[in-house]
Length: 71
Length: 240
Length: 158
Image (cartoon, each protein chain N blue to C red):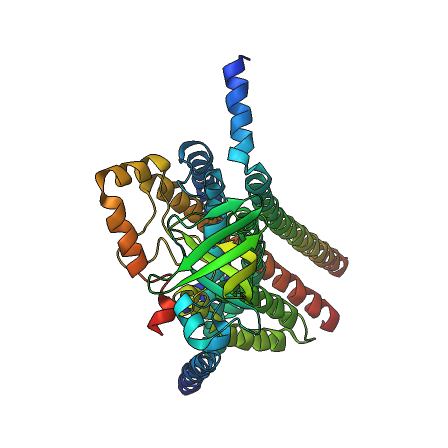
């Protein structure tokens, strides 16, 4: 990596001296929004799994009941 | 029209088709907005590089108001027409709205410290946005405060409607009273007083935040509907 | 259908009453919601003599004198001027010709501020554009328009 590049990177990271304010703003925004999204997706997955389990259980019971009736 | 969307099964099919589009739009718009905002947009003639905080602060503040307005509209629909999805939409919007409000407050504070010279002042704009944060908090507490979910939803819907008076107060606080916070730059008479090179990333980020809201809203609504189904099945098991 | 209409009327009416109540309350408390007073108001009402007050206006051009960490400047609303002294760090947006809010009280006719906040106007543009505007002479036009738009002189209007 040449010197000009690394200099421009550090200038970018410095944000004209406002790094301590600019980067936390973006970081907190990313953490909160991604956190909200992940929490919502996980909740949806867990409800989907719970519903599938419940329906499978019901299906098995009904199947068992029918089998018992036939016997 | 209302009856057509009232059917949860139809909603589940429709939302399953829309969610990937919202996800894709959020990522593309967000990436474009961040690229323009962090790399292409110039520094401001007064604020220097700290102006970039605006690209997350302003969309978050707009969405805080947009979410509250949606929540109040959904609550009114639920109270008047007893629309089964409206209560769930209001309930699903609250946690997203409170996230945006929190972000608007925090990023505003991070901008205010170097620019104004203070993290916080009790001027009309900042105080009314803090009130908005507590309204969301109150709504979320109230909606879960009753054993009977229908009663909780009703009480929270009334709170959402009462709290709606705060929304125009926030919007016009900087025009009605003198405040530390500056007046509106984009939505004002006579056109925006913001250079196009800075307006472009701002609007892209605002669009990304909007599609993000609908994405998360649909995901949470789906989860709410499935939870309702699970409750109904369990109830039948107990009584059957 | 009838009950729906009843609920709709009830909510519309309720919201209307609520808005009216809020408007009444806010106009009653208007003096407490105001964040700062213009120099004209401060001088007219003799504010800041016995208790702390916030004054707001523009930093008068050419009025800033720095001696170490002590700063002297004058706050103007283009009608009246108040001299201010302040010891401490100034915010980054503090400039001559820009909006400023100072909190403190009067000591021997000079406003002694213990806090100085910079007010931001609502214009955003790159430095080159600002430079070009200044060169073409359109800057004065814009500044005048900004001041007319009343962000600093709102106090007088009331």
